[in-house]
Image (tube, rainbow, N blue to C red):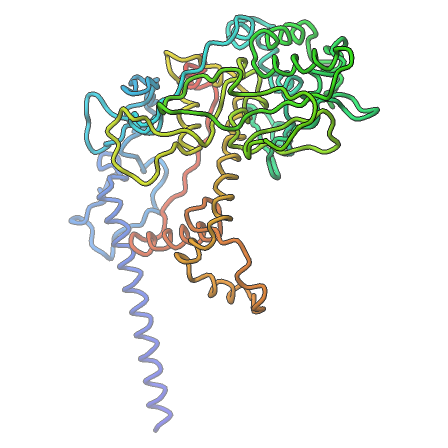
Length: 495
């Protein structure tokens, strides 16, 4: 008797589980279809039986997996209509950058004269515009310059490398360009810039900055032979004209030529070059510094009066020294074809503009991210040398991104005490990882969730995604699309 009652209770329990599972599934289907109806994903004019809460009972309601692709329509894109937002038509009132209307700050409102923050933080950042490049470089960068210009733009990274003052440490991954499609610049490993001495070691060929000083009688051939891939594809006339252009306009090139003249004089002493890493901005405006403010030529002993941020290029050096990403000449020495005048780049002495209505904040200086966001904008009143650089511009953007990330990592490494106060759960994280040795626990570098791509960042976004699914249900459809570089709007912006 007891066995029969136990079996009966077991059957009743299973029936209750099945009923609860059925009701749960029914409830999820109801929520999913209700969201579809509210979002107007299914157009009532396209479906024979419109999906509405009033006409369908819970039991007979269909889920999105029963719909065909022709039945699902978006609220923005209907049918086969081609939608083109057109070129950016709005100009920032503060910095003059060309923007789209949807890039405005107050998106819920629709002002006639919108304000933008992606470019200049609503007028808080004011930088000197880049000067128009020399005539010869402007013709080479022009998309209407003919066959010679097209060939130069295709090999612009190679031309830039033979005139660069510094070497780049990242490993370039060219396998992604083996397939048809637009050119993609991709690097792996750590990215950094390094520079050696003015004179190469015994039996070594000159490279990078040494080409401006050593054996300049055969400079063109030395530059062509400095490439690992050979000199078959580079035009000798173009290399000669670029050399003359940089000698005439580039301040850094003039400094190295001055060192060459000193070394070639009779009874010449050792020469060192110091690139000053600080700038004086009393008015908080970023004017072009003079030659004496950016560099100095040291004859004889080096001395001990070097600034902490200065770069000192010695007469001879077996090793290489790394250039910090916050040095004013960090980018100009790596990209002489993008900065033909040797202009200053980001440095730590940049303050926000005083002529603004910025709210009082603890931070008074421009960040590296804000600087590069300002610099890469397109403006009618500024030379678009960076954007016209094409493949070299891609390299510049990747270089800027890695510099920003390097600066953030350095801040995290030097402010672990502050981060551990806020993220006190790192002890629990160590136990989860299996770090049970007390001597090892606490010595790792903690990356907060604000660091994009870090472990805490990934876990936080995963939890947010699960919370969304818990509230609105599982995703109904996964959409992908392939961009075409020959789209009219893309070709228009590349003119």
